[in-house]
Image (cartoon, rainbow, N blue to C red; front, top):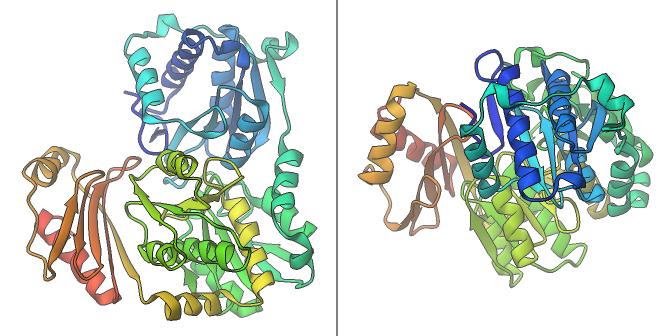
Length: 472
């Protein structure tokens, strides 16, 4: 029943996300560590604010401790990137975060990290799934958490200071201090409050918060920072005259921005601005990595600077691997996750927020001005994104239609090429494109299209939706 997707294992609480499955997963991880002779390296675990997150982290720790694996337990809510940073700094072989990231409140899950603080690759999760297939509940070992603490099989760690200091050392704090920015932060009832607020206050920003209390239902909305969910942030930024609004998802590895005029800044534009900033203003050199559903504006920026843009499948593990291979400056995705060279190998919304604040202060330009600067230099790139739920019984038929029969609708533009690397992506001769793929974390089919005009991108999404017989 435990199957890993692009962002770890996620399941509905009380359905598949239950104690017996969590214990089985922990036992499989323990067996895998012993088989690799990495058990004594230890295991780091942290958790977010979701229902059952701390309890699940304790259950995992109890199993690993019983299997003679030293456990380093972050006993306070922790952003996923902080956990990844701890995995990197403490040089353990594996770590995990109990989180379902931006999924609805009914979900929880486990993200597994590997040496260096990166998302586990498919090879790693496949090995764990094979072990899971061989296990039964009677195979699970467990040691009471209190006993594990008393016998030092579990050690409480606090990586907060090191993580914060590392970010502060990577951004130009003095440049930020000079501007005295007024920033409104929306953690979306998640875990970014303490970390991001500390960084911004250290840089002498004026910071206020909304939606920062503990609410496992996330205020009844999806904890994903997009144009719809950040509507209250948008209204407050305009009403109170903030320089910037920052929203972070449930586990703080993704961001969404509201500019001083109340406009939502799409993650595509965020990545493009940062890549442009790092090369044009900070003098960095190097390529960029994006996933298959992220803007080709990055390609245009790279080409103009004599660099390359590399396209990879969805899943940040692919981005971090390609970044390392090509020594890329920055890597990210259209859903709001990114990282840069020299930081952790996974996405970090807290670090990205700090770097964006630096960008505004160093350039002396607002987000709106920087966005227009990119438009004038590299042209217009407009993306439409549509998520559609569907009857689970239809998934096999849809996959067969798209991937095996390779059937596609009649598009109004000449096709340059078609890729089936991750879903089906159609590249048009005019530079536009459309992709349809199944979510690896939710029962959704996702359709993205990019053209020079939003209306044309919307048209492409509707053509694909109608062809697949999916209702709005």
